[in-house]
Image 1 (cartoon, one colour):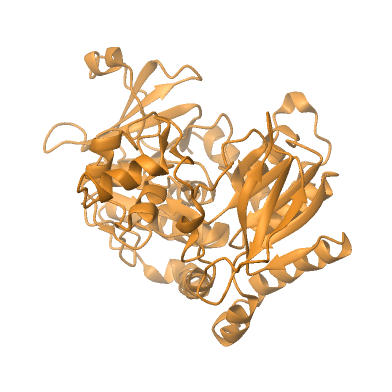
Image 2 (cartoon, rainbow, N blue to C red):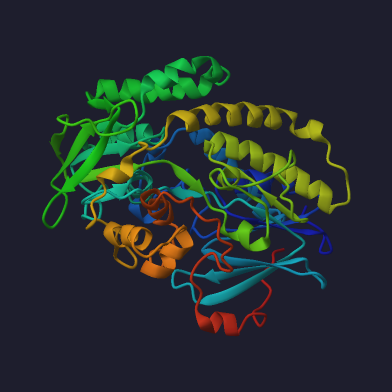
Length: 476
């Protein structure tokens, strides 16, 4: 049975684990749900699928939690067929506008298609942000060479295109993501020369008691470790990448050991030949849309603040998944389930029955505790910026070097990241600082700024000029 035409409207931004869980939880509970997502197919980065044209016969090999994905995929298809959910793929949201009065409380502004030139406006009574995360990028000499990719980028390439960037890889950085990336590349036939982890595994062992509540996650990590051992992948702990080498593309990397304070130990450098370096130092929550709406942003992360129902401090706005803090797919599913049920009840004028999501709340509590421990262990080396030479490019969009950033602080008197940006143009390019802001902050010793950008991505001026003139594409 489809939703009533006059039913309240909920728009979910993002179709990853959190967005799909939220949409399915809200569907059929008296609201009209519209899912707006930039990808051409649902699933987000975690459940990224190869295109049908590639003819993948066993895509499940590249995933764990495949049955969970099948339930989400099939559930979305059923709700769309029943008219309770509208799925708008290839819609790139650049702004969510809040109205004080009028027929709708919010307008979700998006650009349709790969060219991102056709504007679409979705009018809605409430918004649920499930915008996910992006990778923290830290520069080092040679990091701009072809063949150097982020860890998540290597995984996305493998899942989405069934392709790899080379035949011999080094996976480096810090964090749990390195394990599935290394095992995925090895399973695809790539020779993984080494997994280089900067964290100390002893620190994790000392916190074993705090991790014991999630035996499933520990078993998952142990499974990856066993697979790497079976494939004879050499693991170097308390090591870091010092430099990438090559003329036209990557040919080798130099790694070195770290002391207990996080500094490179002299005399420990070793060179590893490879044509791919997949490097990752963790994830950062996507908070642009929440910032523009005026939602409270917590400085750690930074991430969107939410209450026990996943409500932000802006009425009518919920948030779930990694935009509220990094914690993996299972936590995103729990938060999305809670947010979807809460939003549906509130929109229909009912007090939510928290007993309906007691299991999800328990899982959320356990997983947040689990990942808080991981966050305290898997941190980039404290003195990583010491290895960044002055001629190393920090901001790729504007080609700003570390030397120019240091000059802005040491000689021009910049005391914060924003002033460095004004003096050097670091962060003024296409990505608007999303890739380089944390690197600039680390090199200068300043805290990253929480910026309220009016737009979440570049928008053609013609779209701005025609705002309000597009047809309402707001669902069933």
